Length: 167
Image 1 (tube, rainbow, N blue to C red):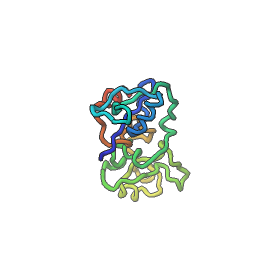
Image 2 (image 1 turned 90 degrees about the vertical axis):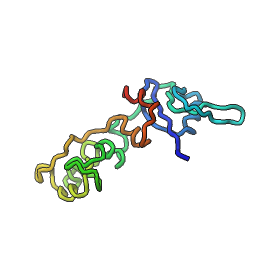
Image 3 (image 1 turned 60 degrees about the vertical axis):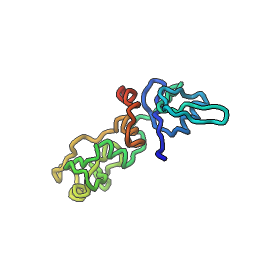
Image 4 (image 1 turned 30 degrees about the vertical axis):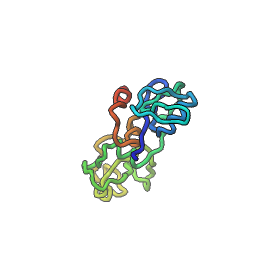
């Protein structure tokens, strides 16, 4: 069975997360969220049937950490950079490259890492960009909010489009 995902919106309709149907039901039963969209098939309980949530909205506003403060992962980094090397555009053998190498004092933050193919990463080595004339195609930055949604669920359901388009 394919796991079903539920889009979670803040009280302000800002997309903040993706969760399982089970977690969404807990939020609904505790009256911490409301259903905005549901699937046609209901979930059978002991005493009654419940609508299967597809999009829920929290009834109170949750403070979400700024996106640059969110934990960085390879998947999120690759999604941010469109799954292509930021030096040559290749989509094969992707790795993580530090623009300012760690050996030269660079850190592992959204502002210093880019997606790189293994060939470009090896060619750049521990040199600075200007030393080898290799510059990233786009400036490293924190990802857009919807990148975390893409990482959580590879295929976006059509029902989510109106809620993600506003973000």
